[in-house]
Length: 137
Ligand code: ZN
Image 1: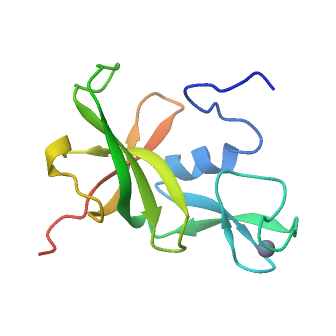
Image 2 (image 1 turned 45 degrees about the horizontal axis):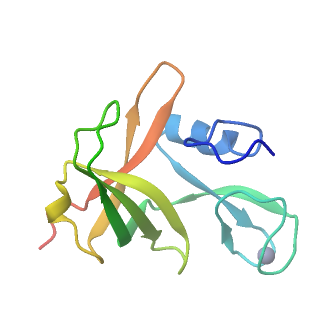
Image 3 (image 1 turned 135 degrees about the vertical axis):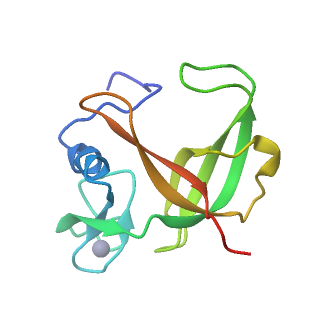
């Protein structure tokens, strides 16, 4: 109970997520009994109470649910950049906080289709970002 950290650190509960990123897969914890996706990882299913949970690969496709533009530079990000809440197509309410690559903040609209893209940031760590789904009219 150390309070909120700005970035989640890989631990036992989130190790599958980071390993998935390294393999180029977006993994979300899923209930084996009712099929509900659970993010962030929890010991039990909020829908049915089951503890029979396992990581499951999702498509990585979703839409921008909402976003906020940050004007303070961070290492690796040129300001301004957008912090985006992406809702995955697998389940209503299944949302990830992320950043959009290759997209300036004024190109983002709520409902913009996006897809996951993985970026290796160190020998051990690969992060999941999103970008606008390319090509489609
Ligand atoms: Zn369940």
